[in-house]
Amino acid sequence: MGKPSFNIKTKKISLIKRSLLLSHKYDVHRIRFNKLLFLIYLKKLHHLEIKSSVNPKIFEPNKDLAGFVKCYWTLESLKEKTPKRNTIVPDGTMKMIFHYGDLYWHHPKNEKSFLQPRCFLIGQLTRPYIVEPVGDTKTFIVRFHPNGFLPFTSIPIKEMENRPIPLEDLFGKEGKELEQKVLNAKDTAERIQYIEFFMFKLLKNNTVIDRIVKSAIETISIHKGQLSINELSKQTNQHRRLLTRKFSSSIGLSPKQLSKIVRLQTTLKTLSSNKELSLTDLAHSNEYFDQAHFIKDFKEFTGLTPKEFYGENLKMSLIFDAKN
Image (cartoon, rainbow, N blue to C red; front, side, top):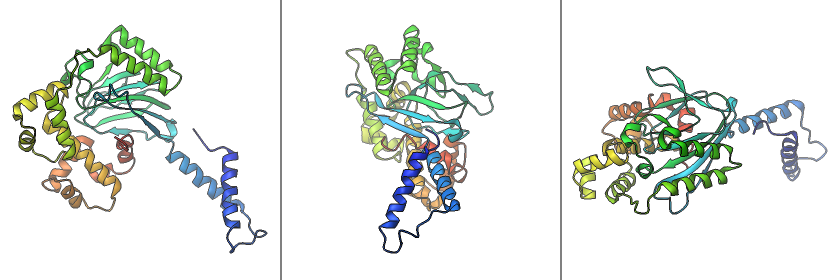
């Protein structure tokens, strides 16, 4: 990555010239690219390269792990082309993160900033999580379904909330060995191979997914987080106390928390695709009681108002959600 090479620029300019030559409005002997236009063109081309330099790629898991793992993704970006501070917005999923590039600072609210581990699991987020790159970003991530990490841990899910936990703390010596394999892998395919072999070893033959929790998650997703907990209880035919207990142990969130997060993520997508919506229309289209309730929930998970959040924060919060 970086600035486009001269050959690429020259080729693009030649294509532009050729398109002009095909038009009867121009005479081949009169076409000239003066220095000013050429510099403007290079500046625009470089700007496009900067905007596209945050380069996420998404990969699907093995079908036998698809009930646990939502996807894998990679992100590579030069420091100068990455937002200085990124707001990670809760999305209801836990993630295993491997930095094979430079590390990231975490800036907790009202606490001392600290450098994150090179390889770690991030627990369920219930508030905005602010990070800052130390240098160039090269990151490989395993994104689990909301209830997908449960079979792989002996630590209660709820205890991981808003925390980066080193893999060695989670898996001991085997976690440290996994780190070294993933960090030294030659490419993404090899990283996925190491991760999947590791997860298959941890899974027991009789590992099953709680159908009650799975059904409730799907219902919340289908209704975009807009159902009340009483309505969710009726649709899943489960008592709300049972749902709350099961969610806490398998997801680390309550049904209400997950619903609010899913609804906010839906709202962010709406905000991204329709920039002309007023806050009132945005709140109404996502079934918030009123604008005040909408702004309250928005600030709870992003730390900012909708107007403050718009821009790089919005783009980075949705960068991996295009297909998932």
